[in-house]
Image 1 (cartoon, rainbow, N blue to C red):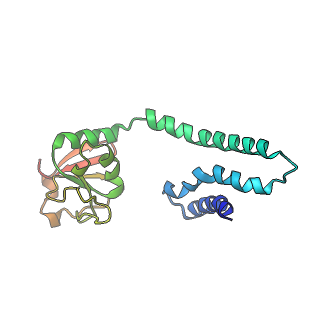
Image 2: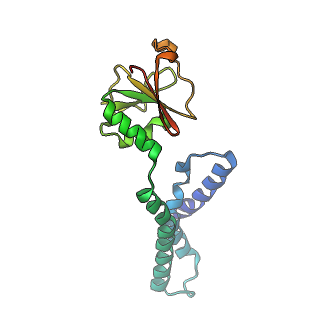
Image 3: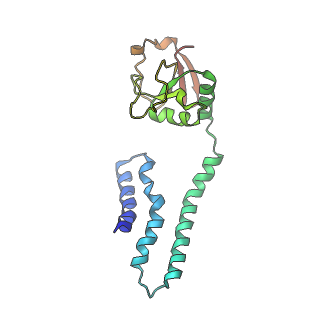
Length: 183
C-alpha cells in the first residue's frame, strides 16, 4: 500500500501542478523517488512465472537507475557548467560592499547562498521587515545598507524607512537591481 501511494502521489502531484499552473518545482520532487517505488509495486504486480525473481529485480533496478541518470544528468551538467552572470554580479557587489543588504525571498535567496557571508543578506517583506520564519537567527537584523530587487519584486516601502528614492544609487546587474541606500 505504501509503495502504491508512493507511485500514485507523484502522478497526482504532477497533474495538480499543471492544473494550478504553479512554477514551484519543489512539488515535482516526488518524481525523483518514483522509479524506486515503482520497483516495489511492480514486483508484486508482475506474475511470478513471467520472470524469475532475480532477473526481475535486476531488470527493474537497471531501468530505475537508467531513468534516474537520464533525468538527472542534463540538469547536473547544466548546473555544473552554467554561469549566471547577473547573479555573479550581485554576489561580487555584496561581497565587496561590507554592508548588510535585504531583499524578497525569491530575489535574495540565490545571492545569499553564494555570498561569502550569508549573514550579509536578510530576507524581508515589502516594508523591509524581516520574515521571522525565513531569517536565520544569526542573520544581522540591524541597519540595512542596500536592497536587491528584480522584475518580480514588489515596490518596497522606502519612504517609511526615510530613504528618499531619488537619493539612492542604482547598480544594475542584468535582471537584478541593487539600491544602495547609503551611497
